[in-house]
Length: 470
Figure 1 (cartoon, rainbow, N blue to C red):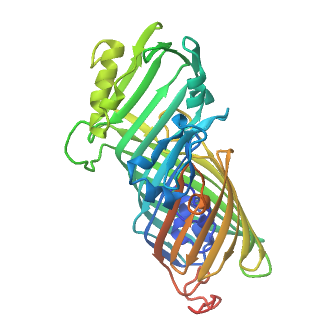
Figure 2: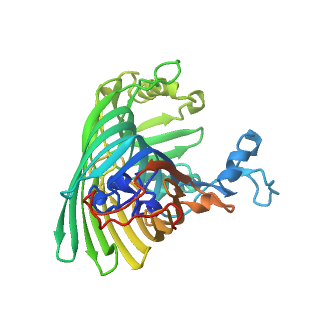
Figure 3: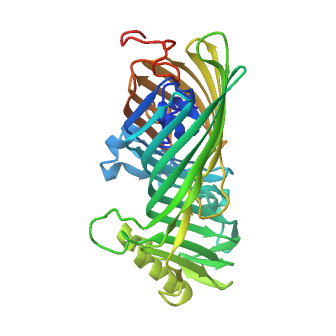
């Protein structure tokens, strides 16, 4: 489909825009062949996303949070506040969800740099993509890890914790996209692939591969049985007191593959546009400034509460790992098992369907389903969305109803004026006070032709559009 880049998460409100050009290849590598542009240049676009269903802030929105979080006295832990307390408008009350749902937390950022696409007269499309990305997540975390479940469990009663894993990294990618088109009796069929070279800067993962039992006792101590923890992280910015620096610690390769089929009618454009793609296949191997650890505890280990408050910054991570190894294995270096590890990209299957029910008016349905085959892979959020939109050369706008991880329902919006776009898949986090669990935003600017038309640059069948014609 013709879409905006994978900015913060999916940004589906603008991904389905018919005039997205090169940015659409990030969701489906074959999408540029349905674009009306002969060429498209992304100058800069960026987006940020964070969301979870473990904790929340009561009765706030993003602007209210930013304004009042500057004063530490406004940050109130609702767990220990009386229910009948008279709250001030400036207060930010942190609380935890008390339910039996599987927990998740995810965050991402995407900075798409200079990128372009061009379509040739013979029906081929070529694109170049450059981007800086970051993502981290934990999914399907058992509900008994929730604060209230643990807090209500009596001392001496074991809690079974099924396997959990989380992973994240920051990386850059440079991709070459190629897609040919084939005409059918009622439309067009396109296939595309994007090959990407990846540079890894920071990465980390953690997993508990077997079910462990945790029992609380007075005096801030835990009995951990059947405990096994595997984890790894880059330490180029965690074992020094100097300012953080950007350093390449790994590299790898990835690719996307997809197909798009259009069914055309008597009017301009298509009636149906159907797409399928597999995204972010690949991984990065971190072999510089990397630590790999394993902690395998005896079945009857009594673990005292580690002094977490003594370690507050990124530069303390290595020291804290040494302390954990010393207290669990008797030696600060005993947990270290290697100097390299890998992190997998956030692989996903995506299905898209777009229907034009009136000239320039469309409705889109998109499914994004994560494909995670091991613990050292970043999990993508599952998305199911319906997005009606108006899409023309100089203005596009859409609203979307989005179900995230088959749990949380969100409302999103997007707006494009000529070459500038902005939007969010979580409009409620920006307006109106409500339960705040995260937010996102995306924006950008690009360049593409005034005229739109078919493959042949010199074809007279092309249809020009004046700047003032909306």
